[in-house]
Image (cartoon, rainbow, N blue to C red; front, side, top):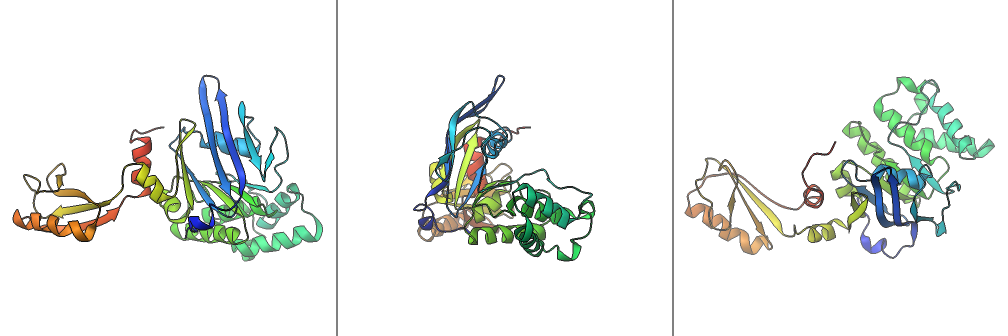
Length: 314
């Protein structure tokens, strides 16, 4: 469940991106992108293919050098090549060694993060418990299911207890049960004080779990805020009424729009209690048999499409 914005807007920013710009040849991947991530929140970063998300994540992780702009972590400006202390990265592509066991992977990544001795053993034991992989700890990772690999991938990225975690599509390609387990794990990280920056194409995940949302397109932030704020800015305020008819209508009753094919009607209302009775009366007056009726607010998907368009991008 998303944390109330009243508890996040007053928290300090732990990660700030200001006027980030990056060009590859004639392609401008980032064009003045700015946003911040606040202590303990989950911020969803959304955008169509080619919007600049991957370039941004690589810049935050230190793998891409910006042409201009600034990235600050815990108030300290990051210079090219600087160690990102306190930052964890969980990549979309699995960063695991298939011939090694879960324990061996964890020990290796722990050492890369600077852990050793007793601390490394403690964190490895924690990670195996956290991921539910204790019973499979001595098996080569190559034989794991997709969900098991995703959980281990996540654990390897946060073994050093970072307070800012970059999550690039952490649930891609997994079943619903594994997805819920991963989000339970992310909830545990937040309970320990970590701030999460999540990139995802699973819009329902962002809608139900993120505190704030930033939509980027063509390398720029085109909208940001809570879901209600995004709905307002996209011009999608109000409730949408959809009526499925038993038989096709030739014309729309008062207050409705007739969908192509004549079997569905839609309307937008601001006050369901006050406005819905008149719409139902219009249906009765035209003697239209209703098969189904739905009233709902705008979704993140409708906001996303309104902001970025419906054209397919490969």
